[in-house]
Image (cartoon, rainbow, N blue to C red):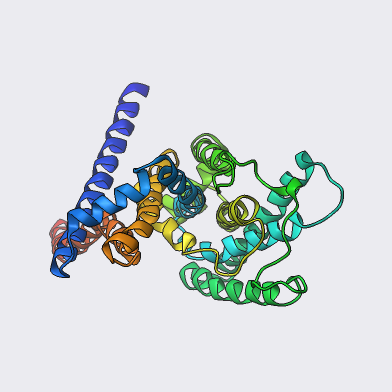
Length: 366
Protein backbone atom coordinates (compact mmCIF):
# COMPACT_ATOMS: atom_id res chain seq x y z
CA UNK A 1 0.00 0.00 0.00
CA UNK A 2 2.92 2.35 0.71
CA UNK A 3 4.49 2.30 -2.74
CA UNK A 4 1.45 3.50 -4.76
CA UNK A 5 0.96 6.26 -2.19
CA UNK A 6 4.59 7.35 -2.53
CA UNK A 7 4.34 7.30 -6.31
CA UNK A 8 1.19 9.40 -6.16
CA UNK A 9 2.93 11.85 -3.84
CA UNK A 10 5.97 12.03 -6.11
CA UNK A 11 3.76 12.56 -9.17
CA UNK A 12 1.92 15.39 -7.38
CA UNK A 13 5.22 17.00 -6.33
CA UNK A 14 6.57 16.75 -9.88
CA UNK A 15 3.36 18.26 -11.29
CA UNK A 16 3.44 21.23 -8.90
CA UNK A 17 7.15 21.76 -9.61
CA UNK A 18 6.44 21.85 -13.35
CA UNK A 19 3.62 24.34 -12.79
CA UNK A 20 5.92 26.57 -10.72
CA UNK A 21 8.71 26.51 -13.30
CA UNK A 22 6.16 27.19 -16.04
CA UNK A 23 4.72 30.14 -14.08
CA UNK A 24 8.22 31.60 -13.64
CA UNK A 25 9.07 31.22 -17.33
CA UNK A 26 5.78 32.77 -18.47
CA UNK A 27 6.32 35.67 -16.03
CA UNK A 28 9.81 36.27 -17.44
CA UNK A 29 8.54 36.12 -21.03
CA UNK A 30 5.68 38.51 -20.29
CA UNK A 31 8.15 40.77 -18.50
CA UNK A 32 10.29 40.80 -21.66
CA UNK A 33 7.25 41.74 -23.75
CA UNK A 34 6.45 44.62 -21.40
CA UNK A 35 10.06 45.83 -21.64
CA UNK A 36 9.85 45.75 -25.43
CA UNK A 37 6.61 47.74 -25.40
CA UNK A 38 8.26 50.39 -23.23
CA UNK A 39 11.28 50.64 -25.54
CA UNK A 40 13.72 48.81 -23.28
CA UNK A 41 16.03 45.97 -24.26
CA UNK A 42 14.90 42.69 -22.58
CA UNK A 43 18.23 40.93 -23.20
CA UNK A 44 20.10 43.85 -21.69
CA UNK A 45 17.72 43.96 -18.73
CA UNK A 46 17.92 40.26 -17.90
CA UNK A 47 21.65 40.34 -18.53
CA UNK A 48 21.99 43.13 -15.97
CA UNK A 49 19.93 41.12 -13.47
CA UNK A 50 22.18 38.08 -13.96
CA UNK A 51 25.28 40.23 -13.59
CA UNK A 52 23.97 41.84 -10.43
CA UNK A 53 22.90 38.53 -8.86
CA UNK A 54 25.41 35.85 -9.89
CA UNK A 55 27.91 37.71 -12.07
CA UNK A 56 30.59 37.74 -9.36
CA UNK A 57 31.28 36.45 -5.86
CA UNK A 58 30.25 39.82 -4.44
CA UNK A 59 27.01 39.76 -6.44
CA UNK A 60 26.17 36.24 -5.27
CA UNK A 61 26.77 37.28 -1.66
CA UNK A 62 24.24 40.10 -2.16
CA UNK A 63 21.79 37.53 -3.54
CA UNK A 64 22.19 35.34 -0.45
CA UNK A 65 21.74 38.37 1.82
CA UNK A 66 18.42 39.08 0.09
CA UNK A 67 17.48 35.40 0.14
CA UNK A 68 17.69 34.99 3.92
CA UNK A 69 14.73 37.17 5.03
CA UNK A 70 12.68 35.96 2.05
CA UNK A 71 13.04 32.38 3.25
CA UNK A 72 11.58 33.29 6.64
CA UNK A 73 8.59 35.21 5.24
CA UNK A 74 8.01 32.52 2.60
CA UNK A 75 7.86 29.86 5.33
CA UNK A 76 5.54 32.10 7.34
CA UNK A 77 2.97 32.47 4.58
CA UNK A 78 3.23 28.79 3.65
CA UNK A 79 2.70 27.67 7.24
CA UNK A 80 -0.49 29.69 7.62
CA UNK A 81 -1.73 28.49 4.22
CA UNK A 82 -1.44 24.86 5.38
CA UNK A 83 -4.27 25.59 7.83
CA UNK A 84 -6.33 27.35 5.18
CA UNK A 85 -5.41 30.77 6.60
CA UNK A 86 -4.07 33.78 4.71
CA UNK A 87 -1.46 35.72 6.64
CA UNK A 88 -1.07 39.13 5.01
CA UNK A 89 0.45 40.58 8.18
CA UNK A 90 3.98 39.24 7.76
CA UNK A 91 5.41 42.73 7.27
CA UNK A 92 4.04 43.88 10.62
CA UNK A 93 5.07 40.68 12.39
CA UNK A 94 8.55 41.07 10.93
CA UNK A 95 8.80 44.65 12.25
CA UNK A 96 7.70 43.53 15.72
CA UNK A 97 10.31 40.78 15.65
CA UNK A 98 12.98 43.23 14.53
CA UNK A 99 12.14 45.67 17.34
CA UNK A 100 12.04 42.91 19.94
CA UNK A 101 15.47 41.64 18.86
CA UNK A 102 16.86 45.21 18.79
CA UNK A 103 15.72 45.91 22.35
CA UNK A 104 16.95 42.58 23.73
CA UNK A 105 20.17 42.80 21.73
CA UNK A 106 21.00 46.17 23.32
CA UNK A 107 20.54 44.89 26.88
CA UNK A 108 23.92 45.21 28.61
CA UNK A 109 23.55 42.43 31.18
CA UNK A 110 27.06 41.06 30.85
CA UNK A 111 25.75 37.89 29.21
CA UNK A 112 28.02 35.70 27.06
CA UNK A 113 27.17 35.32 23.38
CA UNK A 114 25.83 31.77 23.69
CA UNK A 115 23.13 33.13 26.04
CA UNK A 116 22.60 36.70 24.77
CA UNK A 117 22.15 35.82 21.08
CA UNK A 118 19.52 33.07 21.65
CA UNK A 119 17.78 35.38 24.13
CA UNK A 120 17.57 38.22 21.58
CA UNK A 121 16.30 35.79 18.93
CA UNK A 122 13.70 34.40 21.35
CA UNK A 123 12.42 37.85 22.30
CA UNK A 124 12.10 38.79 18.61
CA UNK A 125 10.30 35.56 17.71
CA UNK A 126 7.89 35.91 20.65
CA UNK A 127 7.15 39.53 19.68
CA UNK A 128 6.24 38.53 16.13
CA UNK A 129 4.45 35.37 17.23
CA UNK A 130 2.27 37.20 19.74
CA UNK A 131 1.45 39.85 17.14
CA UNK A 132 0.37 37.08 14.75
CA UNK A 133 -1.63 35.51 17.58
CA UNK A 134 -3.85 38.62 17.73
CA UNK A 135 -5.28 37.77 14.30
CA UNK A 136 -5.54 34.08 15.23
CA UNK A 137 -7.43 34.91 18.41
CA UNK A 138 -9.86 37.23 16.62
CA UNK A 139 -10.42 34.58 13.94
CA UNK A 140 -10.92 31.74 16.42
CA UNK A 141 -13.10 33.54 18.97
CA UNK A 142 -15.08 36.03 16.87
CA UNK A 143 -14.82 34.70 13.31
CA UNK A 144 -12.96 37.82 12.14
CA UNK A 145 -11.65 37.73 8.58
CA UNK A 146 -7.89 37.14 8.84
CA UNK A 147 -7.33 38.77 5.43
CA UNK A 148 -8.51 42.14 6.75
CA UNK A 149 -7.18 41.79 10.30
CA UNK A 150 -3.63 40.80 9.33
CA UNK A 151 -3.47 43.42 6.57
CA UNK A 152 -4.61 46.25 8.85
CA UNK A 153 -2.31 45.14 11.66
CA UNK A 154 0.61 45.91 9.32
CA UNK A 155 -0.22 49.61 9.56
CA UNK A 156 -0.53 49.43 13.34
CA UNK A 157 2.89 47.76 13.64
CA UNK A 158 4.53 50.16 11.18
CA UNK A 159 3.30 53.25 13.03
CA UNK A 160 4.01 51.82 16.48
CA UNK A 161 7.58 50.82 15.59
CA UNK A 162 8.11 54.22 13.96
CA UNK A 163 7.03 55.92 17.19
CA UNK A 164 9.39 53.76 19.26
CA UNK A 165 12.35 54.29 16.90
CA UNK A 166 11.64 58.04 16.74
CA UNK A 167 10.97 58.51 20.42
CA UNK A 168 11.63 56.45 23.55
CA UNK A 169 14.11 54.01 21.98
CA UNK A 170 16.07 56.52 19.90
CA UNK A 171 19.46 57.29 21.52
CA UNK A 172 20.25 60.90 22.28
CA UNK A 173 22.16 62.52 19.43
CA UNK A 174 21.26 59.78 16.92
CA UNK A 175 20.82 61.24 13.42
CA UNK A 176 18.97 58.28 11.91
CA UNK A 177 15.56 57.05 12.98
CA UNK A 178 16.95 54.01 14.75
CA UNK A 179 17.41 52.28 18.09
CA UNK A 180 20.66 51.80 19.99
CA UNK A 181 23.18 49.40 18.40
CA UNK A 182 22.94 45.78 19.54
CA UNK A 183 25.90 44.43 21.47
CA UNK A 184 28.44 42.18 19.79
CA UNK A 185 27.28 39.34 22.01
CA UNK A 186 23.85 39.50 20.32
CA UNK A 187 25.03 39.51 16.71
CA UNK A 188 24.97 36.63 14.26
CA UNK A 189 28.33 35.33 13.13
CA UNK A 190 29.23 36.78 9.75
CA UNK A 191 30.03 34.24 7.05
CA UNK A 192 31.89 36.89 5.04
CA UNK A 193 33.81 39.71 6.73
CA UNK A 194 32.18 43.16 6.51
CA UNK A 195 29.17 41.80 4.58
CA UNK A 196 25.57 41.13 5.57
CA UNK A 197 25.74 37.38 4.99
CA UNK A 198 25.43 35.69 8.37
CA UNK A 199 24.65 32.40 10.09
CA UNK A 200 20.97 33.37 9.89
CA UNK A 201 21.02 31.74 6.44
CA UNK A 202 21.70 28.37 8.08
CA UNK A 203 18.86 28.97 10.53
CA UNK A 204 16.52 29.63 7.59
CA UNK A 205 17.56 26.38 5.89
CA UNK A 206 17.19 24.45 9.16
CA UNK A 207 13.73 25.91 9.75
CA UNK A 208 12.64 24.79 6.26
CA UNK A 209 13.47 21.20 7.23
CA UNK A 210 11.89 21.53 10.67
CA UNK A 211 8.68 23.02 9.27
CA UNK A 212 8.46 20.15 6.76
CA UNK A 213 8.98 17.60 9.55
CA UNK A 214 6.51 19.35 11.87
CA UNK A 215 3.74 19.49 9.27
CA UNK A 216 4.38 16.01 7.90
CA UNK A 217 5.27 13.94 10.96
CA UNK A 218 3.71 15.44 14.11
CA UNK A 219 0.17 15.38 15.50
CA UNK A 220 -0.22 19.21 15.63
CA UNK A 221 1.11 19.37 12.06
CA UNK A 222 -1.43 16.77 10.93
CA UNK A 223 -4.21 18.75 12.62
CA UNK A 224 -3.08 21.95 10.88
CA UNK A 225 -3.15 20.24 7.48
CA UNK A 226 -6.49 18.60 8.25
CA UNK A 227 -8.07 21.95 9.16
CA UNK A 228 -6.67 23.42 5.95
CA UNK A 229 -8.34 20.71 3.89
CA UNK A 230 -11.72 20.90 5.62
CA UNK A 231 -12.66 22.77 8.78
CA UNK A 232 -16.06 21.12 9.20
CA UNK A 233 -14.69 17.59 8.71
CA UNK A 234 -11.83 18.33 11.10
CA UNK A 235 -14.21 19.59 13.76
CA UNK A 236 -16.33 16.47 13.33
CA UNK A 237 -13.19 14.37 13.81
CA UNK A 238 -12.57 16.08 17.15
CA UNK A 239 -9.87 18.59 16.19
CA UNK A 240 -9.99 21.82 18.18
CA UNK A 241 -10.30 24.38 15.37
CA UNK A 242 -9.83 27.43 17.60
CA UNK A 243 -6.66 26.10 19.21
CA UNK A 244 -5.22 25.02 15.85
CA UNK A 245 -5.97 28.42 14.32
CA UNK A 246 -4.25 30.29 17.15
CA UNK A 247 -1.24 27.96 17.15
CA UNK A 248 -0.87 28.35 13.39
CA UNK A 249 -0.94 32.14 13.49
CA UNK A 250 1.48 32.24 16.42
CA UNK A 251 4.03 30.06 14.62
CA UNK A 252 3.48 31.89 11.33
CA UNK A 253 4.08 35.22 13.09
CA UNK A 254 7.23 33.85 14.73
CA UNK A 255 8.60 32.71 11.37
CA UNK A 256 7.94 36.14 9.85
CA UNK A 257 9.60 37.75 12.87
CA UNK A 258 12.80 35.84 12.10
CA UNK A 259 13.16 37.92 8.93
CA UNK A 260 13.37 41.07 11.06
CA UNK A 261 15.59 39.37 13.63
CA UNK A 262 18.05 38.34 10.89
CA UNK A 263 18.26 41.91 9.61
CA UNK A 264 18.73 43.53 13.03
CA UNK A 265 21.17 41.02 14.52
CA UNK A 266 23.01 40.29 11.29
CA UNK A 267 22.87 43.11 8.73
CA UNK A 268 21.98 46.49 10.28
CA UNK A 269 23.07 45.94 13.88
CA UNK A 270 20.03 47.90 15.13
CA UNK A 271 16.42 48.64 14.22
CA UNK A 272 16.41 51.21 11.40
CA UNK A 273 13.10 52.61 10.19
CA UNK A 274 12.35 51.54 6.62
CA UNK A 275 14.89 48.70 6.57
CA UNK A 276 12.44 46.41 4.77
CA UNK A 277 11.82 46.87 1.04
CA UNK A 278 8.73 44.66 1.41
CA UNK A 279 10.15 41.33 2.59
CA UNK A 280 6.83 40.51 4.25
CA UNK A 281 4.72 40.86 1.12
CA UNK A 282 7.44 39.25 -1.02
CA UNK A 283 6.99 36.13 1.10
CA UNK A 284 3.68 35.52 -0.68
CA UNK A 285 5.50 35.16 -4.01
CA UNK A 286 8.18 32.94 -2.44
CA UNK A 287 5.56 30.63 -0.95
CA UNK A 288 3.56 30.54 -4.20
CA UNK A 289 6.56 29.51 -6.28
CA UNK A 290 7.45 26.84 -3.68
CA UNK A 291 3.95 25.37 -4.22
CA UNK A 292 3.36 24.61 -0.56
CA UNK A 293 6.60 22.63 -0.10
CA UNK A 294 8.76 23.95 2.77
CA UNK A 295 11.82 22.22 1.32
CA UNK A 296 11.46 24.25 -1.89
CA UNK A 297 11.20 27.61 -0.12
CA UNK A 298 14.99 27.98 -0.22
CA UNK A 299 15.10 27.58 -4.00
CA UNK A 300 12.17 29.94 -4.47
CA UNK A 301 13.69 32.56 -2.14
CA UNK A 302 17.02 32.27 -3.97
CA UNK A 303 15.30 33.07 -7.28
CA UNK A 304 13.56 36.13 -5.87
CA UNK A 305 16.66 37.10 -3.93
CA UNK A 306 18.56 37.09 -7.22
CA UNK A 307 15.86 39.23 -8.82
CA UNK A 308 16.04 41.73 -5.97
CA UNK A 309 19.85 41.86 -5.95
CA UNK A 310 19.97 42.12 -9.74
CA UNK A 311 17.38 44.89 -9.79
CA UNK A 312 19.90 47.23 -8.16
CA UNK A 313 22.30 46.81 -11.10
CA UNK A 314 19.37 46.96 -13.51
CA UNK A 315 18.54 50.45 -12.35
CA UNK A 316 22.13 51.67 -12.65
CA UNK A 317 23.00 50.18 -16.05
CA UNK A 318 19.70 50.00 -17.95
CA UNK A 319 17.77 52.89 -16.37
CA UNK A 320 14.95 50.47 -15.53
CA UNK A 321 13.43 50.97 -12.11
CA UNK A 322 14.04 48.19 -9.55
CA UNK A 323 10.26 47.78 -9.16
CA UNK A 324 10.52 45.63 -12.31
CA UNK A 325 11.50 42.77 -9.98
CA UNK A 326 8.29 43.32 -7.99
CA UNK A 327 6.28 43.11 -11.20
CA UNK A 328 7.87 39.74 -12.03
CA UNK A 329 7.02 38.50 -8.53
CA UNK A 330 3.39 39.58 -8.95
CA UNK A 331 3.16 37.84 -12.32
CA UNK A 332 4.56 34.62 -10.81
CA UNK A 333 1.86 34.65 -8.11
CA UNK A 334 -0.85 35.21 -10.72
CA UNK A 335 0.34 32.37 -12.98
CA UNK A 336 0.88 29.95 -10.08
CA UNK A 337 -2.68 30.63 -8.86
CA UNK A 338 -4.21 30.40 -12.33
CA UNK A 339 -4.72 26.57 -12.47
CA UNK A 340 -6.61 26.65 -9.16
CA UNK A 341 -8.67 29.61 -10.38
CA UNK A 342 -9.61 27.75 -13.57
CA UNK A 343 -10.60 24.72 -11.48
CA UNK A 344 -12.93 26.85 -9.32
CA UNK A 345 -14.53 28.44 -12.42
CA UNK A 346 -14.92 25.01 -14.04
CA UNK A 347 -16.56 23.56 -10.91
CA UNK A 348 -18.99 26.47 -10.59
CA UNK A 349 -19.86 26.29 -14.28
CA UNK A 350 -20.84 22.64 -13.92
CA UNK A 351 -23.12 23.17 -10.91
CA UNK A 352 -26.10 24.74 -12.76
CA UNK A 353 -26.09 21.78 -15.15
CA UNK A 354 -25.66 18.97 -12.65
CA UNK A 355 -28.06 20.16 -9.95
CA UNK A 356 -31.22 20.23 -12.16
CA UNK A 357 -30.21 16.89 -13.62
CA UNK A 358 -29.93 15.36 -10.14
CA UNK A 359 -33.30 16.86 -9.16
CA UNK A 360 -34.92 15.33 -12.27
CA UNK A 361 -33.40 11.91 -11.52
CA UNK A 362 -34.65 12.10 -7.95
CA UNK A 363 -38.16 12.99 -9.17
CA UNK A 364 -38.21 10.05 -11.59
CA UNK A 365 -37.05 7.69 -8.85
CA UNK A 366 -39.97 8.80 -6.65
